[in-house]
Length: 335
Image (cartoon, rainbow, N blue to C red):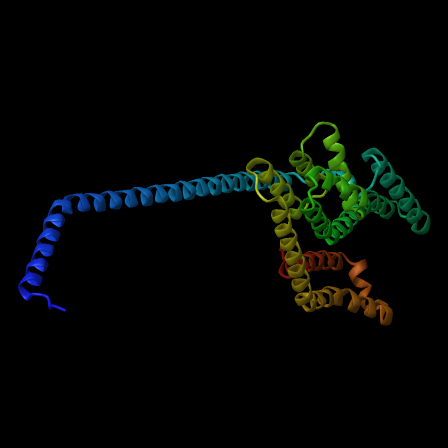
């Protein structure tokens, strides 16, 4: 074995380095050009990705702006309708369907007049005083029927609020299972509980005469004047105009309504002590007057027989009415 000559080895190494240097010098520009090209391609791809992201973000912002505008328009319309209702009180014709009564306004007024006339005749027979009989007839013929109608409206709206979230939950399940909104409304109209069933039946009847679901739901607020019904109509209207997940929107509305009901119950429980105190304070003068009249009638009879006593009773009635009104405003809360 002959060893390698160091001179030959060094010469070979020098030739290899020289060839490599020449090759690098010749290919350097091409390598740099390739690197710049790849860098430009990466920048262009990143710019296109960023542009797509910006376009998607812009589309989302436009969609959110469209939804926000729809919500604002619907809330403005709701506020306008509320102002119109507060400016003019609901007539008897509007309140009869709200109370669930199927009579006409003429029948209501005739029934009130007959009841007032009967009460006036009873007072006239018992006392023989025409003025007392006339006052009783007016109070019973005009005041008592309207008070009874308001009581029926409050009772029916309370029952509606108790059942409305359950109906919304049923609608959510129906929509998630693939049913359209119209079929979900028909399901509540046929299988729901009163008075929700009757109100949704009116919506179905409005659809049958050519109205859309949003317009029919907005009409439901006329026979059931509640903020919750207006919220439902707004949700349906916005979904019809801007699209979106209807089941999620109705489910969120159901949660909001349940939270509102919990808050009302909490406020009512916390204000019961104040209401009891107001009731005792308001009834105390009448109780004391009755006890004095039962024990010593001659002591209090001057209030009813003397002109000064009449003035004292009138002033006391005014101040008592003001006090009861102030206490009522202090213990009533709107949620």
